Image 1: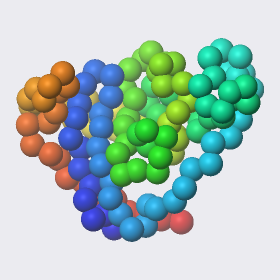
Image 2: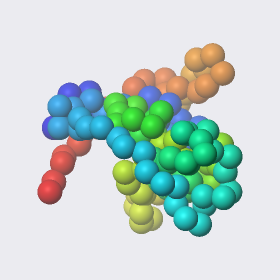
Image 3: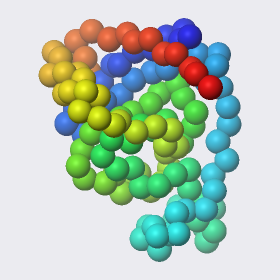
Image 4: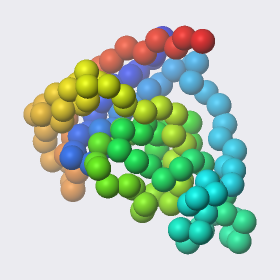
Length: 133
């Protein structure tokens, strides 16, 4: 059940969308950086005790934007790790399987228009969301 779910921005690096739902509310408590990555970043959160929301964003990860719990989210489509995000985003999913990646490619081929320095979809693309437990 989604009150307003749509994709609105695409690039070779990412696809951005919005998921507004009363069922997606919550809070995020930053934790320790993943052990294998702790020494690889310059900590900007509660230094010197590095706090992270998640791992370095990698190809296919789905994450809330700005370290929160929505409604903005993005799918990282670049093969390059997003080290510039400094563990500041909460990862909540991952794109998996050829069919899912084919859908991503279709989204990236939709018509866009410029909005400042970014490309947005010419028309927002709504989607449905079903939460299962």
